[in-house]
Amino acid sequence: DLAWSPDGRFLAYVAPAANAFRRIRIWSADDGKIHDLTSDRFESWSPAFSPDGKWIYFLSDRNLVSTVTSPWGSYAPEPFFAKATKVYHLPLTPGVRSPWAPQDELHAEDKKEEEKKDDVKDKTKERDKEKKEKKEKEVRVALDPAGLMERLREVPIPPGNYDDLSVADKALFFLSTPAGETKVALQGVAVARQDVKVETVVEDVTRAELSGDGKTLLVR
Picture (cartoon, helix red, strand yellow):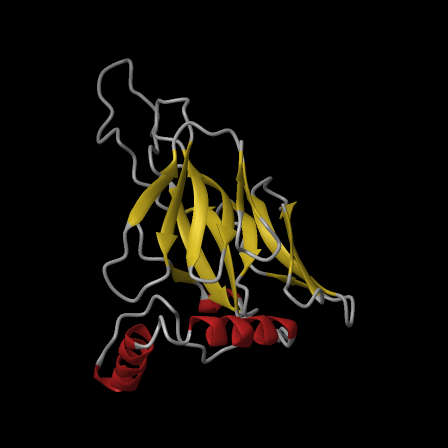
């Protein structure tokens, strides 16, 4: 798994640890240094940068809750983790508020601003598009490696069997395969501070890939 930052200065990739678990590392093109994004305690893969370059998302098997509640008899079963995978995001610099963080009294202005944007959405659609394109061209990713792994945060969606994570400007997309089934579905979730809901985009797919500009999904 490889993922370039929006400005092409950082490369996130998956490498095996000494215990054979997959872990995510990030390489800097500026100084050639490599930093560990995740530990070797859990399987982690499918890194993807947010379009603004402030966050890196990935999948990790950390919901280790077995559906086998208690072994018994001479045919004691092994643990079975039906929904081990969760989606995580990590800020590349400290002090960045998560786009999934619920609104509260300390960020009332954020809520008012969002409501204001919704009210004038139709009138400013073209203007917002131009600003967004300009902003994307000006993205410069910053990385502070101190305490990097400690800044890990969950995306507030249920665990599952996920793979091939993609990050668009206002949504996440991933493949989902229910335990015991072979059919794969493309699912998505809009980035929101409340009422977060996972929805199925396309049923029975084998692969999905987000275009470079984040506006088109290629599905097979």
